[in-house]
Image (cartoon, rainbow, N blue to C red):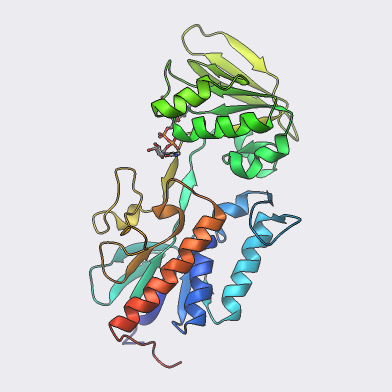
Length: 320
Ligand code: NDP
């Protein structure tokens, strides 16, 4: 502590797989990490049900349970996990200055940013309800496609993600309807080629989703042609939304280098940002892989990078 302002040796912002893995490594390296969870402790995985592709769980695990395990593991080595939202940051200051919930200010020697990204949704009431009840609405084909093997599904979007996920689903499902609101895809030519050459994908152009049908689970989707106004029901049991993600990086704009969509740029093969002592891990810096296991891997890299950077500056944690 200096004055009334708490000083933190290694501050981790975000509580998804990237943040907790960074915390496990940072705590074991005696960096005395403090992790602020954000408003959704556990991150995106707390909104999914079964996670079948995280190594080490041969029978699968529920998303919230996996995140609780990661949190417990981080705490076991001494990470302080605190509920709170980072609302402002001055990363160029030395030490770095961070504000929590617009009130509390802390300073930090090293900061690991693991704020993740949020899937964009259409905003339909039944979409939210069925998504929260694990009723067959998902924003991740790689995570949830498996549950729809041999069934008919629909996916919304015309970008690279939708194209990639549609072809992924086409390998598992009997039929994939791709709902595209314009008369063309935004996806790259190579991805378009794959879509058009997959016989069980049917692209419905100029098509918007009116409603998702079903009480407990998806029983169909009502779609509308936005040129003719004609509506029809698609008999599908799964509904995937792939209309983009938004990285949660707004509070760092103007300080950290980002791409045009707001993903934080890191030096290739590392988690170093353009500001010394600030590291970015997980989905806030990754628009390509976006998997729990890749986020966890980059969280580990972030802690190792932070440890080496702090050692090179000979900045040590205050004795507890
Ligand atoms: P994009 O923003 O590229 O595409 C979003 C798509 O969703 C567009 O077709 C858009 O339609 C549509 N859309 C947006 N809002 C709505 C809505 N409310 N209703 C219906 N449709 C909607 O997002 P992606 O996630 O596809 O890609 C993000 C970035 O990641 C891109 O730069 C992409 O190239 C990259 N990426 C690269 C991959 C790779 O290299 N393997 C894989 C995946 C992504 P419209 O065109 O009409 O605006």
